[in-house]
Length: 132
Image 1 (tube, rainbow, N blue to C red):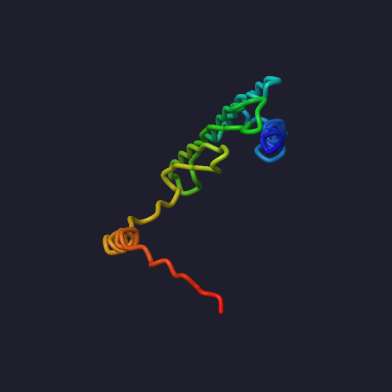
Image 2 (image 1 turned 90 degrees about the vertical axis):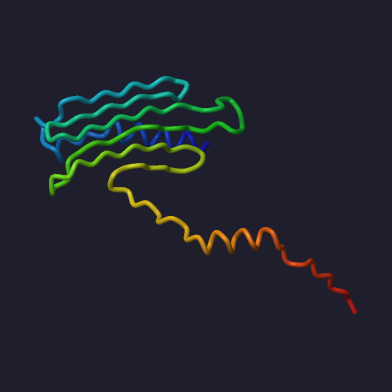
């Protein structure tokens, strides 16, 4: 059921008329291809350099574990002139994005890693509570 909702949102976004936002002459390429099984492919390109592509596929169809997986990318130039490249995967494990502008967590400090290892090697003793 979840993948049908995600598919419906993806189709709605792909079919949306954005010409009033970006201008009627700005769309260079727009294509959408879908299949009854739930697979789809989407491409969009504008004259101001925005390029996007996504592919969707239903994993484990006709099972209780059916899930929609969407892979794609977006490329554009920010207002300050910085090129932005974003690649993403969205599936049953959530949305995972990788890009030059996506923040990356700092490495875990060594003393934290040592403390986690110590806790794993020295579990707390099991307590037995006697009822009166």
